[in-house]
Image (spheres, rainbow, N blue to C red):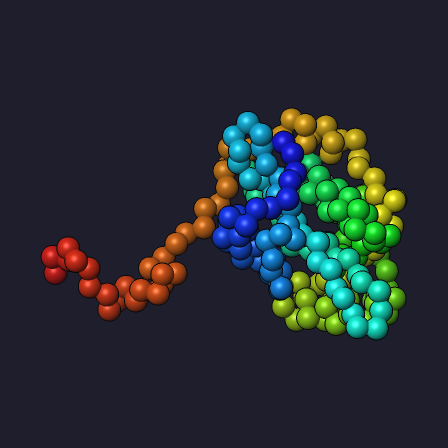
Length: 195
């Protein structure tokens, strides 16, 4: 199992899973994402994104967002390693801290994230928090991490080394005729026998 940058050709896969998981796809760009891959099967297991906010009158702000792990790969350290890769990228880009606006802050606190008062957020993220609460994450709260303070629990590192998909499998995204702009009640088909 490893985590790498997403490729342009994975845009549809990312968008399908972001939508299926009810995650934030605002200002989507596939190049902002990383993807966890199983090296044995080449199966995609999880993903996440860095979003850089560029206020006109303040320094740039780094937010981690749209972090998801497919059902078959959960509880195996996949999300932890996606977050680790994103934090490393943020540090490589010169950010000293990263923010996240999440409904379940407990997961991120194990890596060193700390909950902060929303009034302590940069104004750009205060607006983003409000829009997230109005949309995909009604219970969102802000957390922040000093990039140098990131810690990976040993148990998650070990799980990741031996991660394998669970038998319950991934929930497939069902495609319907409507997804292709077809009205099934009105459409006729070339080989329709009429009854």
